[in-house]
Image (cartoon, rainbow, N blue to C red; front, side):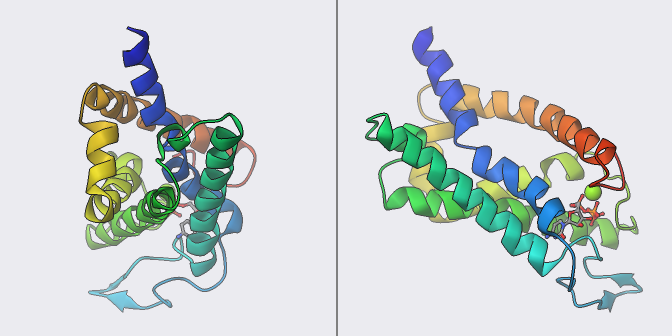
Length: 188
Ligand code: CTP
Ligand code: MG
């Protein structure tokens, strides 16, 4: 029982570098939009909500937090980086999760614009899961072994389910906080 709980907790813990970049992008965002203001079929390619500063500021924040998490695990004497795996492999996991989540976020905005949803407009499911899909796709492309070991093998699939349930709840909570504190224009 305890080992199952631990597996689930590790799967959620290692996903923090994928969860953080979106919030960090709100803080760092602004300046030149990633689509340089260009349109496609009468709509912006991505819109003003996707900026270069947000992308790199958010992505590097995710990597930085992951490095701190690995550092803490090493200080505690862990050999597997508490789920990230030993260095240097853990670095590729961090980059895939944090930049993958922002690439998924970009893909989400791209699709929203194609569907005619304005910047900041609601797109259920896409808003909550675009970054999760991006993080998993990039991690699967470069670190298939790690994704299998963490989210499929043994009780890993249980932590994947826990993550998929937790993400929309977290997303909602964080966005309400962002909205109330004046960082975000909409509570979603
Ligand atoms: N942000 C950014 N650059 C990114 C991602 C996010 O600057 N690559 C900032 C923007 O200020 C954005 C805010 O974070 O408005 C919230 O992100 P998000 O909800 O993804 O963007 P929206 O403005 O809602 O736009 P969209 O409809 O395209 O999702
Ligand atoms: Mg939004």
